Image (cartoon, rainbow, N blue to C red; front, side, top):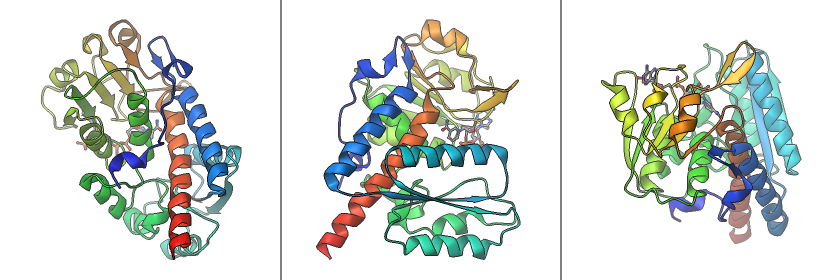
Length: 302
Ligand code: NDP
């Protein structure tokens, strides 16, 4: 199956989620949730999402609560395991093994970051690739590189869905991704390259003349987690600017970028909050739904 099968197979009407220049991910996420509900009914399945949270990090607790609420909102079965911050790695993996064998569960997510005594990769790789909800399993990352249908990392998948839902042709244009993490930057660049046929550049902390790349970008994705390192007064006129960053400043959620100058120059941009964040959760639900469909089909054949 081609990589494009890793996204919802429908067109989301542009005028239902874009407001002026603002790409309102929160509106598109609502459309995606509606699509998932309808498709799950058609397929006669109840997808199940299991979340493992280790420790008492305040932000992680908020994210896990939001994921649970979203899963319940689309009629999924939702299970959460909360472990203390000194939980042993074996204990975390043992819960994953239980979910791997639980036929009611189709998506398993371990909330990151894990405490420092735990080997994050060993934990993530113990999730069956078929039940990977986050697209972090090496098998799924490899399939992405090979252009095969897979479970995609949620944040880049949500951004690609937004871009694919715009009435603009991006093939052959220049995409610049700032950030090269395994969970955002790298899969983002790969998706822009393979699904949108964009000429794609990845920038990172060692990039020289970052601003020169930024100013040449038709699509700019900032995923650095560092505020205002990009001079947004110089983003390309008519470009699409995606701000992945999430920061709390004086109690308010804000992104990597100063979006005020972007408003005047860009064709479209994602606000923070209400842009990329809600799409990340919507794609987590989609991944879990898609895993359930695939597992169900395999069971019918077996
Ligand atoms: P990481 O810290 O793993 O990666 C940050 C990347 O930014 C690195 O590749 C780093 O480069 C690069 N970087 C750092 N400083 C600079 C610089 N001065 N110039 C150019 N590149 C730089 O972060 P994540 O990818 O996990 O997340 C990035 C941001 O996105 C965070 O704010 C996070 O909170 C947010 N996020 C938001 C989500 C959402 O749903 N909205 C979901 C996931 C993340 P190098 O590799 O060289 O160190």
